[in-house]
Length: 626
Ligand code: S6P
Image 1 (tube, protein in one colour):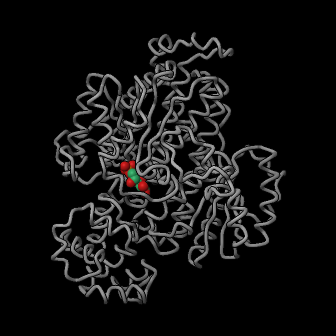
Image 2 (cartoon, helix red, strand yellow; image 1 turned 60 degrees about the vertical axis):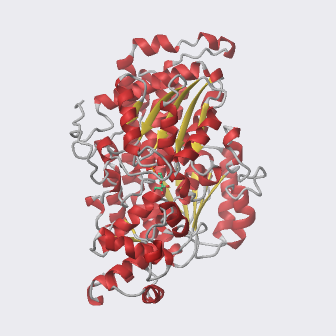
Image 3 (cartoon, helix red, strand yellow; image 1 turned 90 degrees about the vertical axis):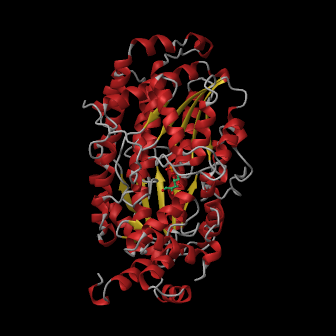
């Protein structure tokens, strides 16, 4: 494998890769639905093939580092009485942290091992399903949460996930870990190089993201910390790290922990678990583990890749239906089982901050709801109800409270992961009820599903790819037992599902005019990163300076032409207001292009509510609008 070609180290920030516009998706807003799927595929492929000359997933150095982290994880799992593995993130990164921690704990439970995974999501458990973006800016909140979750543990592997290496919440936690190296092994996971990390002052803190990251880099040289940062290219929708950023986070962490479990030869008798000897395997056979890591990456790629051709035609149909639903002011509902239902919830929860959509526009429901997945009680709060009928994330709630109000305008997508008689039974009953309400019904299924058991007439069925037998043999030869092999089969199909769900929600919002070129032009400016992104979008769309765009954004936030008195307002206060104001970016773009008053911009917006159309009207004569 090629060695990484690192960028020269001057600490001069250029635009981070995760905030760049991807050239492959510049015309995604004018593409047909099948073309949208191709564009998303081409952008996602960069997860596996890398981007430009930067470090890739498969590069030797990256695989080696991941193998070392995984060895450390194995040692902690072995001695888990007073150890923990804590995954932390904001927004999608926090949801993926929750997803992995929950999944790994249930796997440990099945293998007779104590559950030692914990998660932290900025903003608490409400953020699992709602947009609670402001906490991302607080290093103090990050540190406080970490102290709570780490209480009573002697050794902790801490993995802070920030796709953009940009979340002060995570920086606060890493800083705490680096001040307590006797307890913590700090790891930062993200997808920019260090020289792109921001050196901007963080309100109420003495450090910057760059100083924290550079400190961690120093520790890395002595094996006291790690930075895992393969570069996977810019997102298809600029800055939308929920897409491949979330996917590659899932892939890397699952690979890391499945490899860790392969180090442990667990006795079939739980009493003999003391004899688990992690150190022996870990020390002796690094190259075998590195090979396993590479094979696992290949498994993800194989299923992700084969899902595109098998699902494309039907997925296009489903995206069209979902787009029509949103355009008609209807809804898109995902209803699923097991981890597939959870991924539906995650996809839906990302739409309000990304597209400025309502919570109800796209919603997800999971059999049993989130409450039973509770894995680290100290991080759970009362926002998640215990009774599934009252839990707004559950399939039971969907049946009782949503199904009665479904109309022909809505699209319902069932997410069916496995060959399970109970699921078939429940799904057939649900299909019957939903068919009486709407014709827009999709079923995304894994190849494990026996479709003859389902009454799928008039449904759009999207089959995903499946892991080839030879790949299963390869990972089993590489050290995974058949139980772990089954987890891989499940995990790789989840990545394909995640891509399909991202395609549905992105495609539907493109249809609704929420994307201009490849920019999310109606995002919520609810933290400092999003505020900066919003100003950048206004500056690019209106072709004006950053300063001019900033003024336009401030006028749109405060709905006044006289912003002189707001000049010294702290960023935290600006975003607190901005998070509650509708259509800030579209109004700011109109202000910047037309040079009009806020009142006139609001009138313009009201007359042309579809943002992309309104922008095109402003930028070019109506006769040339496509
Ligand atoms: C991105 C999503 C956001 C991010 C969050 C954390 O599409 O809407 O919620 O996940 O801002 O970003 P990062 O770069 O720290 O992982």
